[in-house]
Image 1 (cartoon, one colour):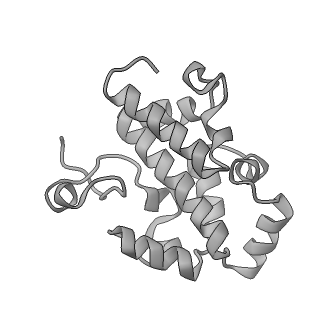
Image 2 (cartoon, helix red, strand yellow; image 1 turned 180 degrees about the vertical axis):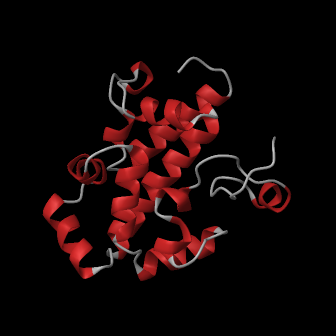
Length: 163
């Protein structure tokens, strides 16, 4: 695998020690160090960040990176749009909202890794998928089960299984 610039959240510890993921990382989807005020490199660092609550600036970053509107993001996360607007004024997402944002960013990171192309990955996330019952992957990210189904489908694509 080519050497990249940022380490991904989905790589195991041994891989993280020796390689980095070329492409869009979960942290960069959320605005990177300027927004997160850190660059989490392990699951435990992500957990601490989620428990504290991530900066509401991550909302604007995710919207910009993914090329979607705030209302579409709110729907994908199952967070009322008015709540997102209020959090942006307050400056910090709740731990639950932070967890949802990180879950979304992890799926985006994984899609970019699998497709090895940011545009193709984002397009795939926004398009109906027969392997997901015709659902749009982004529309399934509001639940842990839906996110798992999207990640499973990405795994099937990565391994050349019809998905």
